[in-house]
Length: 583
Image (cartoon, rainbow, N blue to C red; front, side):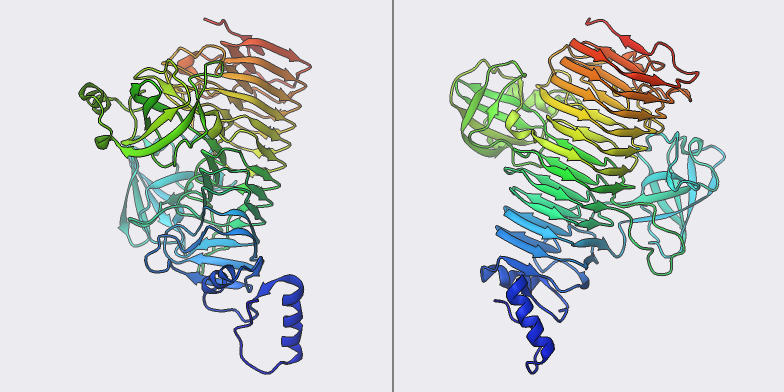
């Protein structure tokens, strides 16, 4: 048992604390300056329930570590951090759980000081519209952060009509004023608008608030993230099957000296799952005002850059994962043949003995093309020889995060729900999102396959009002799409066994539902309210999506629609349902 750190006689208070420890687990009653050594000692002693004393802990990484708090190889333990706030005083990774299994973390709140963002009010727009000046609010960092989001001063939420603002540059032109430069930015911003300006981690430091790396069976219960220099919570690799119960990504308190409430939570995505074998359970969580996507389940393909019988060399498209594991299957499509990995070895491109013509093609690859991959490679041996030729793309159904459940969550954030796996999205309330998007997000020729996805009982309000993307086919409040080069869409079979039922769409700008490239789709008992009250944006224009339709379907097979109610359609609705050809 971990004993108290205070020294004194065995008073009634200490006796009470002693018996509390016996009943409820390990606890240190006097708040130390740093709880990390106490937790580490308890883990080394084999304790199974560790209680961190309540309080606010202002911490930096231990020397030699990138994260402020690191837990590695923990097993079968509960860490109770109720009323504990970890405030990172350096913009780096807050907490990393590495190769842990069956660990429960309860109650922790994570925040940063200084904040990884600042905010202010637009006080000037250049006459040529190529720059705007933002006066920083009192109490917020006087920093020229360049990642900008324009905010409506009335709703204190992303401004409707805001375009993608990529490529911005920032400079301090006065102690409290930042000039943001981007051609045409003044067309989107007006005097009096609010703006958040965010950043990532400090130089050479890892990003994110909380990471779960190669973990399994983890539970985060009632964990709160107020800010993060990257994503709020991200899990990657490992067996997965992790649970996020009652977690919150929400704005924190006003910083000292501030009169304005915060505009932002995380700089990047709020919550992400990446390359896990089993997808997470995310239930009864709240996500608000994140800087990018609200929640995503991520995976990718691999490019075959060397092939000899059962032996292949694969290039990673996403370098920041551990990749495929022994026993994982690979395939080129849902209906294609499979082989399983019997051996694997990670190598860099320059050590993979690739043919000169392959190296040249990799070097010459244009961005977002099939051959545009990372220098990280993996040499694998398969259990059987299959016709996977040089230049083909493969993916693994064992590393998509299939089987996820996203249920009973409250989302008020302008980013996407982005899904690249099969699972259940049920009874969520999505208020003013970009959209709910299902898409492999790989080059058109790359391997992809997503099946067994159910989207039911959700309410989606006011999607489609900002960041129009004419280059994307994902024009609907719910969009299930896979594309080639515009205007071509991939044929049916990228998606399979899709159910969209009992959802409510309210006040959507543009199409409510877009489905392409799918087979065996059921669309039933959905309610579409107040659609077409405003003119749609131009998302989907390059793929000839009928932007005045409510349901748009193309390149699909075996689609069944029934009992979908359209209530109070507006003046900008044309043909309610458009069934495109399969050519």
